[in-house]
Length: 261
Image (cartoon, rainbow, N blue to C red; front, side):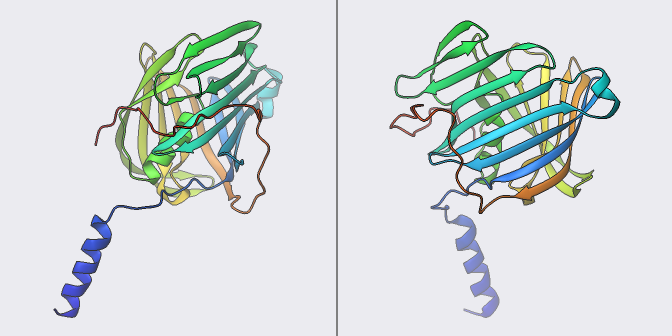
């Protein structure tokens, strides 16, 4: 066998041998320039490791002249743990003083397959059927799927009063220039059943498929846009405490998502 043939066979083996260890998300900090309708702002995101998985914090606040319109803050914290083929939500906490939305605190109890908590003063309890996500953990699920070359066209999202199916599709590739740099990206679009809002994440493979551009349209009108301005990996950062040490993640890590390959 000549040298060229040996190289070809070696490459073929590498490409056709399944990975035995799943690639993991990289802890990081990222900042985005944000436009929400007529309000400009800044989105700060942070992903850190916990003993059981990850904790993501997203904070949006007004900047510049937009502070005249609002001095409120939108802050969402999501904890999620790795499972066999992705991640699943553990806790979800959101505070929104920009739109004066009620505070929400939800725990995903996988031992009893129930999502329970409060929205404002109202108790919430919803059954869990298969892997479910909150509004933040879905982003990291999509990143993890892309990183590990998994493809799913449906996900289940917690949406306060009910669980909703979100449909996901890959819409193509392009080059995107941001304040943080220029990236070749893949577009991932998701929309919940019954919702007029469509969210598009333009994800950069070189940043573990972190979205470098996020766009949300409602009835074909752009009402939210976030563009990456800085990125910092935090691979050596210490573990952070979880919001709820008693949150149960259950013993069975298998997923019941519908898959399309």
